[in-house]
Image 1: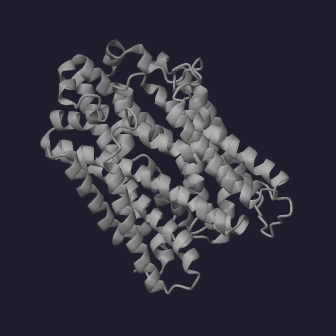
Image 2: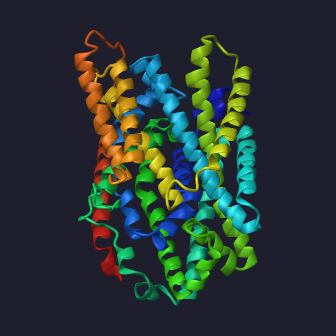
Image 3: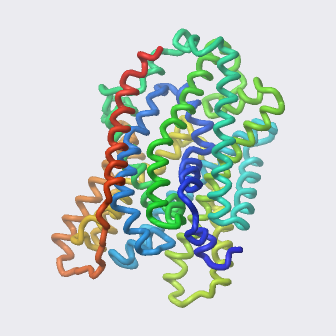
Length: 500
């Protein structure tokens, strides 16, 4: 029974690492990746296995979070990650950062609703607008009565179902195209390239070069897993710091194989549509994300169709329930309590949590109606939204953790400046790949924070002390293993075409 907001948001801080690790992967590798990663590989112009480059720096991002971020967060016993910013900087920094999170996460959650609605629309043959409303309503009701404990426990089950969906669809697809050996005969060789060292994404009309993918992926994943309430909330529900680190280590090693499976499924589907070009006539014009749902509906036995669509919907619910829960947590902890400035009884706090869960559910449903035209594929849309915000966000947190010289006002100005420049690039400079926004926003925000702190707020002194414990030998070995793993992944992708 949930008696307090800590029970609702953090499951009483009692969960072991394995379900948290599964939940961490399930939330980010949910319906959007399941539907849209294969579509990117199979149909997106300029797409292919190149998407895997976005995963190369994730093990390195996990090292930063395990070594610096979560030791601090766990020692503070916080519910909202933005509470750290108040203790380190001031209340205004916390409020501004939380508002930035709520806007970005609310928009991204709308994309997830849209992805799940596509599946339901294809399955039931009903209008997309109806399925958007239906998916959103179910997610809100599920979250109102569940909280984070239900999210994490159900995510473990959902990950197993997702794997089954990938395996079954892949096996059926391989049977239809004549086996794996048919892929190099049917697929455009450019789609088999997994690393492009020649493209740079700065005016060359090539968004997916190695460096924009690698650097963009590092800053996005470090910020997403370390500064985004929807993910940090999971790690804070661990019973101790060791369990938290183990869940991040698990994610660092096992996320890539799942993404590889999604992309391999894209190769299979791409080969199928080359063999059967008439199948593309079943898809809405310019909507590659409909490929996987349409394939499943057309080519699978009825019972298997049900199982796989359950997997997709389970993946969607994994992302939706945690996102809406974290939005509610941030609103209550970072905004309402700061405005109210009075103690709130636990029962009243639970009512507020569920009221804001309902509010954010309505907001996300509303935005889902406008998602379709952001990018060619949904997986690009949600990462584009994140890339506009995550670099500057990471800069504010990192500066606060590693340096006592970073000051509150420059931190706010750096955050706003970084986001503003990224939005300007989005609207007016399409020649710069959106993958660079994370790095550009981070560098700009960091420069503003430290230069501003030096020049314009010299009298500020923080009394907040950060004590990061020294690492024992086993964790240092783990960090080394993650570095070696990242290097091996780069080598693997560089020679990926040799496998065919």
